[in-house]
Image 1 (spheres, rainbow over the protein chains, first blue to last red):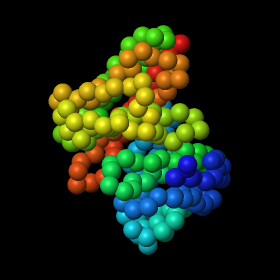
Image 2 (cartoon, chains in turn orange, brown):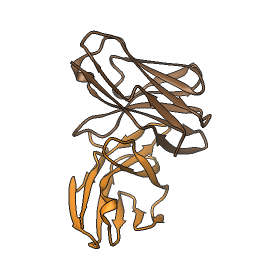
Image 3 (tube, rainbow over the protein chains, first blue to last red):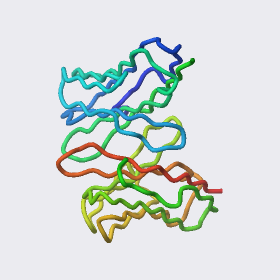
Image 4 (tube, rainbow over the protein chains, first blue to last red):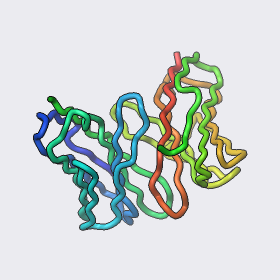
Length: 110
Length: 112
């Protein structure tokens, strides 16, 4: 049973072409939603934590938002260096376990 | 960057041999985790530790054991490696007051 679903699986953008990545979740008792960036051959790098619906976080060209059913990672005017796989994870219930999506592979073409 | 190192970074072994992967942290974080990452799957939790000598199973724990004798080190052991355990293994750390997990650089394990 999928608890975290990310879409699209892959996304190709021209440099400067803004877009959004989606993370939908079906867990009860959400305690946090997390976005990570992962470059090839490296470990996930933490980007944002969101705790409640309506919350937004920003960092450079990235903005993460959260509703009761999904989160979006908005990328404004992306650059080639934004190319990476973006992972979403949720923490729910009473344990410390994270449930990860399979990621969105983003390629930004110069 | 979080002070997390993993060793070895790459390993090739044969089916049936024991393998131990090490995660070392310099952050003094209480919680440590082992994940595996495979194509088509998200990161999946193998085992985690919530303190020295305190460990528990994750969703894919079969065939793996862990040990934590001191705060900074968390070992993952494959008692008898199988080809299905070919994967990239990541260690992560967190603290009780903040749920965010910080990841190490990973170990790529190939079981022939």
